[in-house]
Each structure stands twice: as structure tokens, then as C-alpha cells.
Length: 140
Image 1 (cartoon, helix red, strand yellow):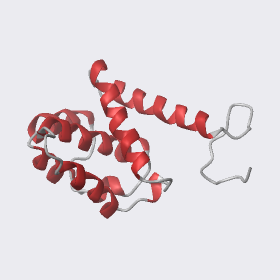
Image 2 (cartoon, helix red, strand yellow):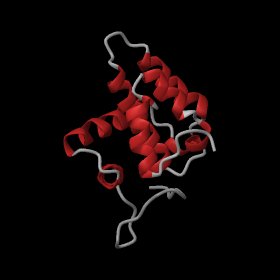
Image 3 (cartoon, one colour):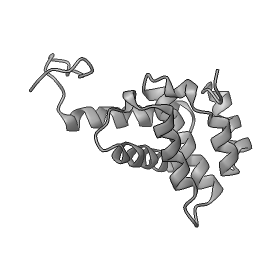
Image 4 (spheres, helix red, strand yellow):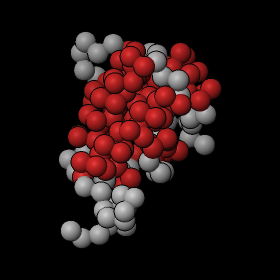
């Protein structure tokens, strides 16, 4: 197995398998949601939004994605008929947490998160929740 600069290692120094790395990533995701005081029954939906987003990237590394790719991934589902504003707002928040809390990426600062929350019609409530948590709400 070729070594990758981004590859994580187990405690014994051996590289993590893909399933181990994915499991650790989602454990970190759940820990972030816990720190943000996300209600427990909602956490699985945030994780599902993150999983769906990652799956849609077809193997591209999340750290290498550009603002435009993220915005397309927000725009297309945002136009889906029957999607409620709070559901879309939850997706925006989940992807924001991914880029601003779990992945070291410039996308955190480049995406206009406030615009996407306003588009969801759920901005006031959710944005206030994340503002208290210290997550960036707009380009800084």
C-alpha cells in the first residue's frame, strides 16, 4: 500500500484501513456535533448530510474541493421540490461543520454560509446556534 502524506496511522504506527479512517472521521464528526450541543436525535441527520456530500464527490479528497464545487452541491439539492427550508438549512450547517470544524480547508472562509442559510429560510435560528458555537458564518 503506498503511503500518503494525509494518511492517518493507528497507535502502533501502521496505516489505518479505509474503513478505520472512515470510522474515525465519523467519530470525530459526532464528537464535533456533541461539542456544538446538537440535540442527540438530530446528530444522525447531520452525519447523513455529510455522508451524502462525501459520496457525491466520487472519491475526490474533501480537502482539495473548491468553493464552486461546494456551492453546486448546495444549489442542486436546494432546488429539490418538497425539501423544507429547515432540512436544507440542516444540510448547509452539516457541510459548514465539515469544512469549518473537521477539515482544514479554505472553503470554510470562501463559501458565503449566510447566503445559503438565507436561501434555506432557516437562517436566523440555525445561524445563531452556530454563531454561539464559534463557527464562521460568512467570509472573513
